[in-house]
Length: 85
Image (cartoon, rainbow, N blue to C red; front, side, top):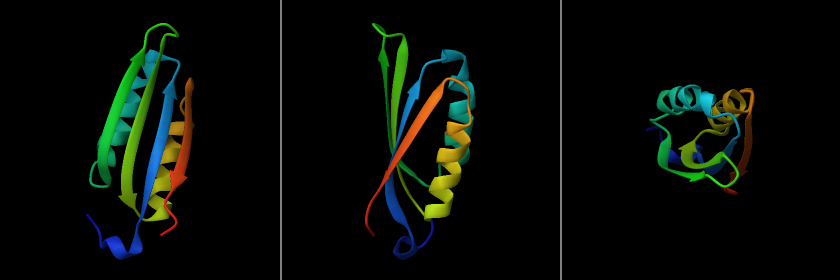
């Protein structure tokens, strides 16, 4: 992990509406594993979707990169919230 004085904490919220995208999501998150503090996934069977929350500590451009890669996947919606510092 990099020097945390130059990083921000963020929560990346992911809604998966196409389950076949999960391997691609896992690959992207694995590639970013050095920056990930924690991850929680919840299947919501009644709606046939999955919700994933990822907490990361990284430079803002790296978090943007992760969010952008995830958001370009079909059937995947991503929103990111950042700490102020």
